[in-house]
Image 1 (tube, rainbow, N blue to C red):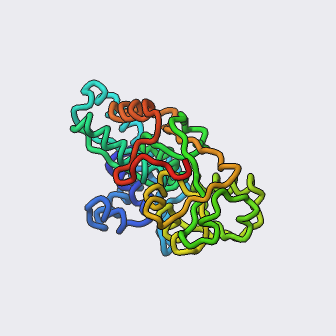
Image 2 (image 1 turned 60 degrees about the vertical axis):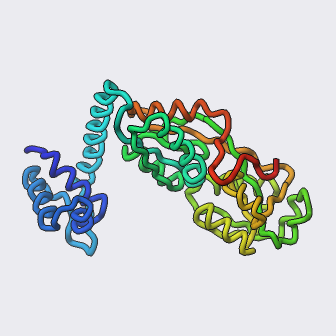
Length: 310
């Protein structure tokens, strides 16, 4: 029995993309070539790895085991490359940083711009998703380092608190409470609260704030992403707790109004996260150092430095 790494990689793409056609498109190969390589891998291992009987292909039990080991094989290969790259420093290479939705949208662009000024030979990429999506890619080895709101939940991940941010309650300019100054929580009982999607750390903190205010039995609606939430609030569909950094420009423009509420929502931590067993590349270590030296959230271009409600 032998294991061909090229065929293993093709097999893993078929599993990840749930089909031979999708994998072929990803790999810039023809579908018959992909199917042939997987079949030859099955022949060499003397087992069936892909169940082709249904409308959508799926790995067999043996295929699931091989896919899990395959992830570890290629993660180890990446770490070997990283270890070699540490000798050559930061003259060239690529940096991929993950970020939860708010962090990835409002922190990482300006921070990576600073990084690239210092290391122009490093190309920078950003993956943005909710916390579940970012943690999944960290665990799978697709991302080496990420910056997320809240605390990582998986035991295989280690997080270091680097910054804090507040959530600010915002309403549309025409909302009845827009001119009322500080708002008591019971005055919000008749409002519809727009909550981020399940899996978002923002939603966890939104629900905690509502609990602190005694507003657990109120009307809510789910909205995916901070930009969509802002648009819904501005359109009068409800009020929402949104990152202070996401709404600064909208408050200045007058499309949103910050409603001070006592007590204020608890600040939420921003963590730098990585896998415990993963060796960081020189670029990842340099980025982590830059982030940890920050004393406050950097200004976002076009938004200025003032913070609503402060």
